[in-house]
Length: 93
Image 1 (cartoon, rainbow, N blue to C red):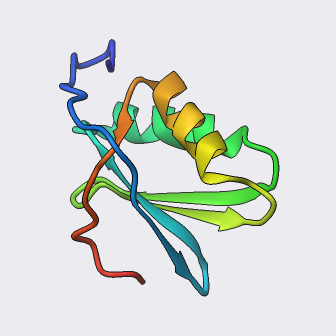
Image 2: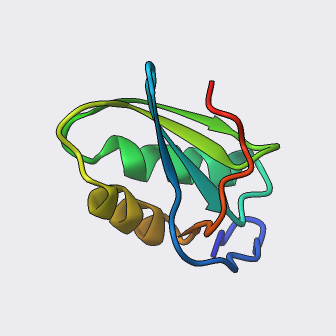
């Protein structure tokens, strides 16, 4: 949970779409810039990740790079205090 704004972090499961620019995940519970920063920082620590772009409005998180697994991204999102959403309503970029 975001300690800065006490965001709700409900949601389980994961969703991933491969795109030409990276893998897109949907993260639930982000409501502010602090949430975005926390998620970006944790995912950025995963080996092989070269960039992270977060769309707060949709919850879409685009992860660039190679050599990382869904499990590593899931663990990073968990460490940040959020959850990968079980559905993926966001169109791939």
